[in-house]
Amino acid sequence: MINPKNTKILVVDDEPEICDILEKFLTARGYRVRKASGAEEALDIMESDDIHMMLLDIKMPKITGVELLKIVKKRQPLVEVIMITGHATLEDAITCMKEGARDFIVKPFALEYVADAVKNALEKRTDIIEHKNYLGNLERKIRNVTTEIKKIKGPKKK
Image (tube, rainbow, N blue to C red; front, top):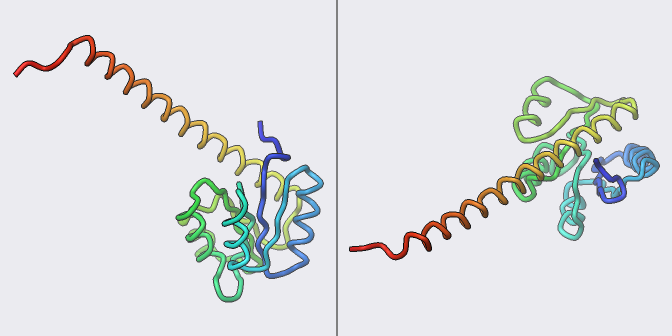
């Protein structure tokens, strides 16, 4: 179960109105929300704060949303990213999904759709983390069993 109070969402859009609407909407649902007006500011925030998910506009000046998506996924692959655009093309959607975006939302959007997309992305993130933890525990158990077997067998004879 996702606890919104423990979930930090970064909204990145060069349109202040979009950032404000999403911040108010997500904050009202209990999420902790930060805003950035561009890629540089978003990267600064991510350096100083543990962000779990990002709502990211595709069309931004200087560094585009797709370029920022690539950087984020390279540096912090567990950050879930939902792309937002007012100028949707199938090519953009395919590119974003190939680069690791979890979803693709077209402006104007229904806020309930955003809520569902955020919930689904965070559930997927939780599943991935639980799976990684399970594999890590399994690897530790295998190492422990291997160590015990070596102790039982004793030193190798030459």
